[in-house]
Length: 145
Image (cartoon, rainbow, N blue to C red; front, side, top):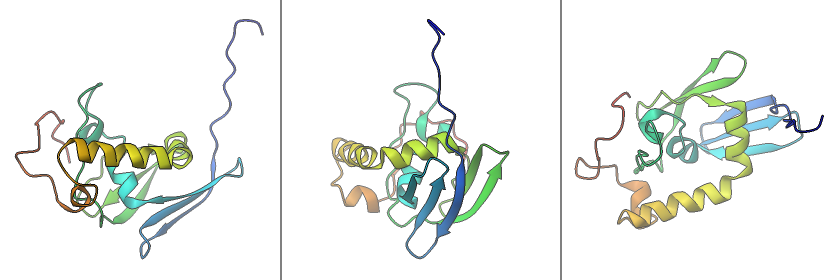
């Protein structure tokens, strides 16, 4: 197959557990990998337009999510889940591929988030505790919650 690019199949979940007390989503995949994803990480890296925007440079930094909880998890076909967060956010559709990416790159994504908090004038801790104020919100989000 000269010139063609082979893609590996997306790992499929074999187990998914919401741990409310420790606030982590545990997910196991058929490639043998398993991840423990903090609710906060899932919330601040939500694939929704509210968080990501509609294109590069339109991302909205999420603050005040240290104690966010997942109140429900809804299946989306056979390819994803839609968590419902305690702050009302419920528009992120987390594909199996995206959840695998979050688990694989969790440490780098977490550090990136903490750096973005600092760049926005928060300390690593206060940004995780203090909700966004109207002064911080740029208005570039899609407005859906």
